[in-house]
Amino acid sequence: MKLDSAPLEISGTSETEIELELKDSTDFNLTPAIAQPVQTVVADSPQKQQSVVVVFGTTFVTIFLAEIGDKTQLSTLLMSAQSHSPWVVFIGSAAALITTSLLGVLLGSWIASRLSPKTIEKSAGVMLLVISLMLFWDILQG
Image 1: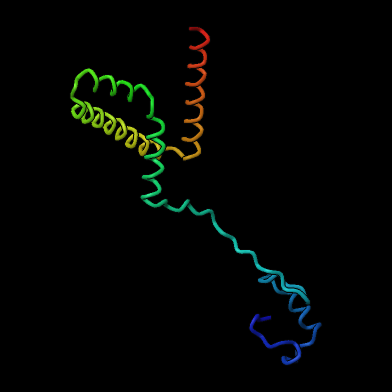
Image 2: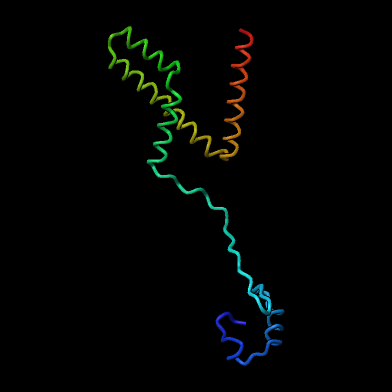
């Protein structure tokens, strides 16, 4: 039975002929009275690329919040106070942070080309857990 065929009353096809035709049809899952909707199968598509602004903003906020009050910032503060050359200390610390960030990005892209994102996430989680346990153990011992 074609989907674009005329209605039953006009086409002259009897109901029993339609039922037989429907039973023989393997292309469609139809019953004599009700046509069931066809479900679209969607293949797993890769995640959409995030916009540059979203990636930049997320990275900036994450690194900014992670760096506030850490030993790098405190060291920079002390060096600036001792040297009385805040701009030289700023340029030196900025260059060091850019270099370490570049190393992180290059290493991250190299790892991402060899491992799945799930494996990387699980590995990072395990490493952070191990570091946390080591710090906790150090506090208990000291």
